[in-house]
Length: 306
Image 1: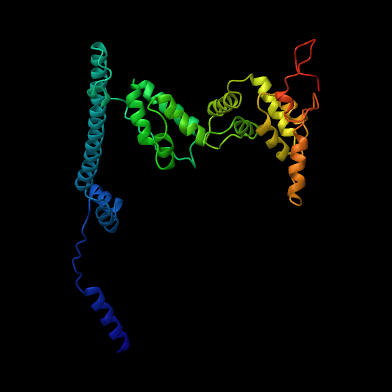
Image 2: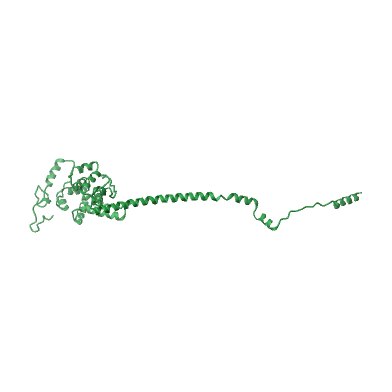
């Protein structure tokens, strides 16, 4: 019976009908398309790429703005050059008609604005030198120079200039006498000269020459330097005394006279010393200094040797 069952079972497996299974078949081309680019990677690449048209519009707009600004700047430059040409054309025309002092020409001059004179910051000689340069370039008459210079002198400087006469030279001389340095002060500046941080080498040399000319004005430069170095070797008090009492004599003659250092203890004795010191060291007479001595050396005609 068991054998029959097995046989029956085997006969059933053998006799069971087979099902028809149809498999889809792809061509080689379709298989290559599907295998080269995965579906997920293709979708990611499409989302990653930005739209090109919007970026191009923004870039073009920025470029147009930059070009528009450049055109505005160029237009302004052309307007400035046009104004310069008009001023130069008008200047030449007025020169041809000998009208350099007319009000119209004065309004077209170099619009150089000089700052008012400040005694605490400005050197009066440098200030007046710059003023003369501008007024000379503008061909101002003396009347216009006086008017312009008075407007640039303020405060005490204006009061000093108001006491001067109506001539331009006297107007300049008044603030020079009040605020100008003495020759020995320019010599001190020359000895202690140092190059400034923002000063060029040409400007440094110009400043040295300027101080040298001012400390030796109306004098022989070599002789002036000799006297200044001589006074520099003396004590400050004696050097000041020599400068004050020098007169027409040389610094050596003035220093050779009897010099009494002032003391604070005995004013009466100081007065006596001053009287005794008023003695000529050449003729030994009292009442005058050696610079005023009228006794000359008979052989040479010069003052007695010292």
